[in-house]
Image 1: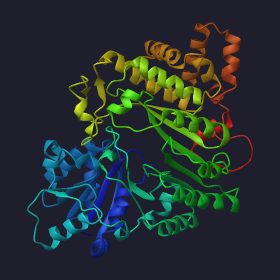
Image 2: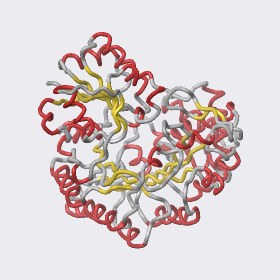
Image 3: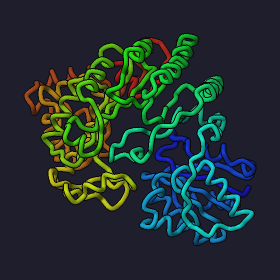
Image 4: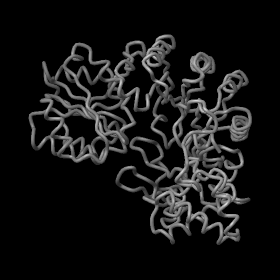
Length: 497
């Protein structure tokens, strides 16, 4: 074995699509290449020991915002104990601002951008000469038809226990300045027939949970419909062995033909991730986000009322030009549209994104360490931003988890943002923590808060008893009915509510 492809995933269930693309495209070096994945939190010495046990000549690391700090430690140790091993970096975190990164300094080479053909070429030069003189190599973007698809490289273990990530296209035509995809010129589709043949092969091998990483799945409606029809056909053929598909949806582009297809999916088979980010038109203009807010709201409303899709909608706090009052109005508006989950995110300054141009004009202060979260702006001071961070964490525990599906409506009342912020502030004073809060303790705290807000003990207990969280000992993740579910557990809890 000569070449080792490695990364530290955020969780075991996250199988690296990027590494599998590299492995699939190694060409003549394919038989000399092995993939080895780890999970963040692993001991650096153990990672290095396991890597070196394979006796590699080249180790290629996939570097992302969530693993760069730990990967830096791995690279530093690897180069100390085995300096003869060549280290090559790739991935979004090292594709920009390479001159400012310690991990790039430690490594031998870095491939920026697309690595499908550039990484194998670099490995060939390292192994057979002439040895490359440049440390940083700009990845070449090949024609989509020249990229070998990686799906056969998902193992039986992956299919049985991990999320299967797939993509029908790469890139994005939109220019939202907080997103790395804003640097793309457009979206590039893979050949649809070849892609669907790969999906069929995965399905026949037992894959049932497919997560599409396309940034703009519904950009080409005919393509979207063909892909969705693939899953509808599987559901019709085997309703007791259902598939589950996750797509990222452009919120203001939902024509009637696509709605008709979406409406055919049964409960527990479909999730849409929908990026709203902000409902403030001035903020949208500042960050170059084109979005018809009225149409986006109508589409979310329609999806909630007329489909069984699980709706996961994103908002970002800390964008330039947005204060707490503006964010609160957007949050309340989104709550009124009825999504199952609202992903309350705090702005991050991803390397290479144009959001940095707003740093001075809007007094934006970012954490210098990953994930480079905004700490303050001219509209939101540091202390308030930390309150929003805690709000986001408690919101995930209480509202998004599906464990308090009935109780959360009472918590939110007529002023969702203000009421949940009050609850969040109180929770922090009571617990001094946002993590490692056991579910039974969380349920008792929610009950205590309801009583403080004027609800009787009996009524609060009865309300919690109607929820998963109020029945911790006997709660089941299965929804009502006997039908087998492919959906993730917390979505099943929403479905069962």
